[in-house]
Length: 292
Image (cartoon, rainbow, N blue to C red; front, side, top):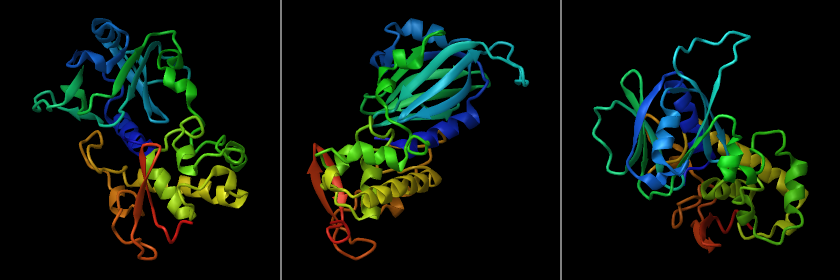
């Protein structure tokens, strides 16, 4: 599943190529991809004639602010764009957003196409079909329609994700720290890959209970969460299976991962064989020597 660095990579790519171009229509190839509104026709009619002012990322969600596309002019200091609602997207496990020419052959798992002026289109491709797309009508708060936004914790790079906050969240929990890091209500955007990587750099075994972590270890963990996320953003994310940037390019972080998906291989630090265990239905990768 794309995590924070992958979604951030897509967000930045979309901001480079899709802004201020009128959406002239679209085609929904799999109706259940549209989470709101229930009518595919209403979804397409709501988007047609709008343009994207800016993309932002919240956790693993992508959110685009829409403006009326007709007659758009570059903003001045006192310019106020009329809002036309929001476009929300969650890639889930295998979702991809690709900015392509309409003449490009349709991908086998293409689910939604949005046609932009200038002979370009944005395609949502999703092999496993778990991804979702929302059109939030004007005047509605995004979190009222995209209800998952209501339950997200702070962004890792925000001031709210402080040492004091993380200590408070973890110190009384009798649950494995790996599971806690996957809880989007504690911190938004972290998934399996970067939880494993941050725990390795912190020397913490993934099954360690939160209540057994000292303040110093939590401080180290917070620092390493930020480090691995930034390193992966700089590498444009991780591609193990399906992730691609908007231009269709693989992410490069997987080639330098410390432990994730490296079970059976030697630890890059000590040479001990990386192991994998199952925790709450998910895999956890770790070095039994470096993480105790």
